[in-house]
Every structure is written in structure tokens, then in C-alpha cells.
Image 1 (spheres, rainbow, N blue to C red):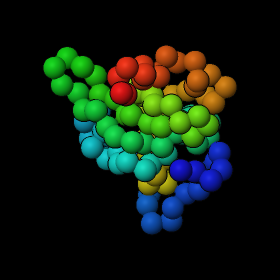
Image 2 (image 1 turned 90 degrees about the horizontal axis):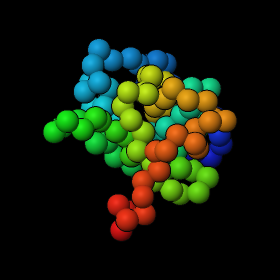
Image 3 (image 1 turned 45 degrees about the vertical axis):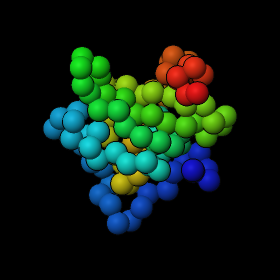
Image 4 (image 1 turned 120 degrees about the horizontal axis):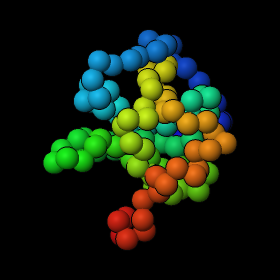
Length: 109
């Protein structure tokens, strides 16, 4: 997990990575990466990736730093990977907790 709200860049990775397709983007995301808001605030840690299939859109499963709840961040809000570890999505910190991305407790049991 992030030690601070602003993840540090890792020098061994390109500063910004963008992708031609959603599938390529999701393939590049790994557990342990940070889910970061558009204003570069660390919000959650990537737990896994759900790839698209059967009509379902792709999602990134994350665990929110502040309270440990699981969230499903839709692939269509993802922007880029920064510093090799920060998966940015299109929401600012002030609004990110009100997106409806929480995973219901029954789905995690």
C-alpha cells in the first residue's frame, strides 16, 4: 500500500504509459499497483483484474486504503499508468468515494 496519498514514481519505468486497446491496458495492470485519482492521489491498491467477457466490461478490483473496502473500477474510466505503478482513472479525490464502485458484502463472502 501507499505510505502517503501521493505515490512516488519508480525510476525504472516509463513516466506515462497509454495503450491502444482496453485489453492491452488491462493486461499491463498488476496486483500491488496503486489506483490513483486523476489528480494523482493514491486511493486504493489493485487486487486483481477482471477481463471483459460474455458482455461484461473489464474492471480493476481494488482495496481502498482508507477503510479496506473492495471496489470495482470500470475499465472505461482508466486513463494511463504513471511511473509503472500508478493506474490513473478519470475521477478526482473529492468525488471518488461516491461512484457506486463498492463491491456488495455478499459478493466478497
